[in-house]
Image (tube, rainbow, N blue to C red; front, side):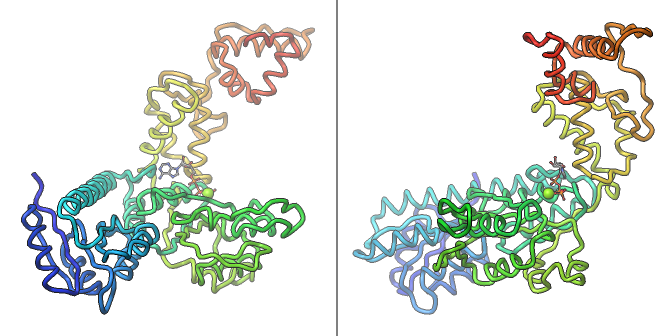
Length: 459
Ligand SMILES: Nc1ncnc2c1ncn2[C@@H]1O[C@H](COP(=O)(O)OP(=O)(O)OP(=O)(O)O)[C@@H](O)[C@H]1O
Ligand SMILES: [Mg+2]
């Protein structure tokens, strides 16, 4: 049995709060009282609180402000609002807009309060439990999809955990493929926003008008091609997290508009006279040196300071080789699933080779090498021959063929190609994806060639 949950009663009328506290105490809870929202915040910061039962109208800081403050701090206990009869509309608002757990009309029906309180405490315990699990896992070097064995990456995990519960803007920096997007998703997944959307927009992939329309939305007819009204990422990610990927590539005029949104927390759709309020947590990512961008005039300094509230740098893979075996093993599991393969392990000599590589493309490059290897291997352990030709240090043995290609002068290129495709397909047990990978051509090209040779019937 876990220790008693603590319930905080907030009411400016001491007679009311002590009567309520007494009753709640009889149900087996530890209790505390506060005379207004400000005091309540103090009590909550002093001791672990599992649920709050609060009046709505109070001097100094009312129930609504209390909810706002708690919400701002992220990880807060569930709040049950008590409201005078006839005030139901405001109460519904507090639940819908301010995230109260529940509201009850006064005079409070004992039975009702008891049930709701039980539920609130149970929810709180569940959150606590999953947070504890997460902490344990991150101690073992896993958080969400992120793997971190090396000291450098463990401190990245710890920064993510510190940033996640807050609303602070996070700037993720690091070379290409170091896991910035994985980190952004992890921040969202361990944050109180996890139930709300996570959206990513790649600022490098779109021309200026389209980026702005993607970000802020547009009204019908706002520009050529805007045939319908559309919400932007800021609206769509409401309550959740928005990743501004490759922020260093954002056009300067768009940077100015973004800065305004970050300052006012309001967006205006292109072509609209109205602004709407948005509640979105921003994570920005870049593999560029933004400082150099500022020097060169391609990045606004004021935006840089807005974004750089909490910087997390992802070190390159070559500076944390201890992570390679763990990441590689996890990737093989994922890729097995994706390609319907049954690779059992990475053989020790291959693993050693993987550990020694320079990996200029970091984890993404590792993933690409493993993807090819998993497809070529199909089942059993990944061996040297499954690594790409010219892979530093890899001794290339030819793939053992089940059949033999007889090459002789007088044979046409087409005949030789046809023969090579035939035995490769045989070797790949007629798995076209594998065969194409072994031949170094796309599945589509393989398909076309088979068709050309009249051999496309059923693989
Ligand atoms: N710490 C990690 N644990 C597990 N997998 C990882 C980790 N870091 C990266 N990966 C893998 O590497 C791939 C590339 O990572 P990601 O897309 O996050 O890189 P990035 O930093 O955003 O790169 P770019 O700057 O090119 O956009 C991911 O799909 C994931 O499979
Ligand atoms: Mg990325």
